[in-house]
Length: 158
Image 1 (cartoon, rainbow, N blue to C red):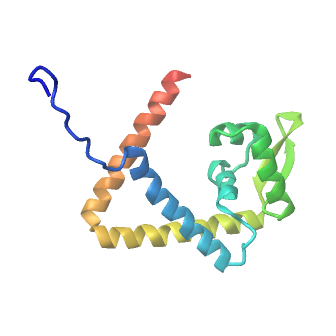
Image 2: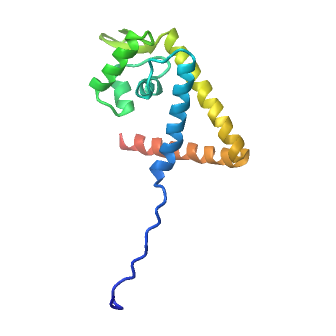
Image 3: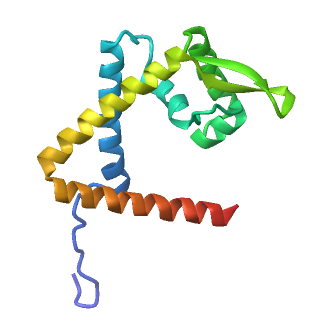
């Protein structure tokens, strides 16, 4: 190697930022699935949770839920149909537009929400205990700041 060629420095194989966010998220999804199955919701899979995650508590139009989840209307429609057949969701007329409908949770859907939140709470409490309260709270605060930044930037793009 000649002296005028730059020295090759090995790039460390560390986890990318996206993986650092994704791996804990996937662990939460797994905990939710375990909790749901333990409470008799064995017909639900992680893909169905996407609907619940993006469906506001008052319900919303399918197109807006799909856009929030970054899915096609057709894909979201398939998930919603499955959840309707299982008694988790229902469609009601949109009071603002008689041609449209609002997707909302049924009592069974609200029970899924309750179990999911319990599962998340238990896992978060476990992580907080294992990592340490102060460190965990700082991480949570930083994540909230990051979310606020991302949401602010997204609203500027509109």
